[in-house]
Image (cartoon, rainbow, N blue to C red):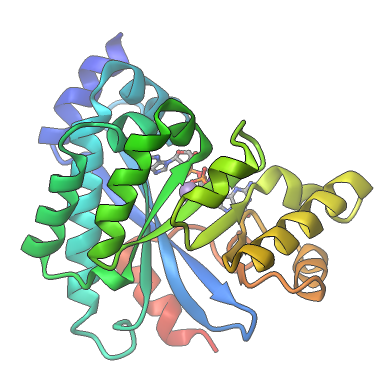
Length: 254
Ligand code: G
Ligand code: G
Ligand code: MN
Ligand code: NA
């Protein structure tokens, strides 16, 4: 409860920031980044989103917090649009189920994109399987409207939820993100290796980009490349970085 009160004031007090984790393609080019929320609490120091996002979600504060994330990410994207070495990068933004199903979400995204000057074709929203469980028709209608603006969709933590393949095929997705729990095991566990190969195959059949997250070792990267995974993200390449460090990382990367 203490944390919840702190979280409300944190939005006003500018204790939140976004960090950016690079995403690479199979040619080892940086194609974009995932925006990840960071909270620097004045007394507690850094508080992990794994700790405060669930609280924000259950209290409803996620709607305002998510709006801040979206606005900050889009302003950053628009700013990078003016920098030659940054201008082609895409930005992925996490959207929690409660935020996505909020009645004003569609309008919020349209407004934020328009007001920021970001190119909607460079914006990707990461949703989780649970949003389609809640209300598939509403999810479909929101996604279709935002797709019409040029915005892309990625299914985060894929394989850990309860979505069915019949729901999956109805959604206008662009990308599947293979959950890190499967990536972690590809070298040791035959079941994890099978799951990852199957998700890559499914993505290929459905015409979706497949991104493996949580890539930490050269062996995992080798396995994923060998099985034609399209995109990669993880500590092997870089953790999430503050904007200026991410810019340097992109400049120096080759
Ligand atoms: O960045 P980190 O690995 O600590 O994130 C932990 C969890 O918090 C992950 O599940 C991630 O998706 C989630 N998360 C990070 N940033 C955001 C955000 O801006 N919005 C939402 N909804 N979730 C986020
Ligand atoms: O649920 P989501 O995929 O949005 O979560 C992203 C989280 O994963 C972030 O908290 C980020 O810091 C974390 N992360 C990113 N790369 C790695 C990695 O290689 N290993 C581990 N353990 N976590 C990672
Ligand atoms: Mn994510
Ligand atoms: Na994920």
